[in-house]
Image (cartoon, rainbow, N blue to C red; front, side, top):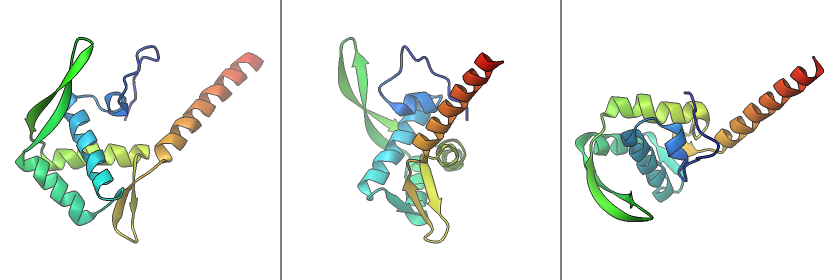
Length: 134
């Protein structure tokens, strides 16, 4: 997964930075909300039910910016179950946004994403320091 962003125009929503398409952003936000409703933990069954629900199609309310204000708009979204696992859940696990406990067989929201970003910033700082010394 590659993160490309403009430091001067950071969006309010982290999913805008992490995911490329509008549909991916919406589905990732829906997954986050699903985690929130389930106490930040989901089993394999709950994850599969969520994937099936978005595969079959579901309605979701999104905020649509119109000039300086925004309004809520209801849209119907359908997202292929396999693509959900490949393009949403797997990248979120790889980046540390979601973790999977093999023993409990549970998915959980993780702060490892924050730790990874800190590690990346330290790598950049080290690169700069080496360049200044050399």
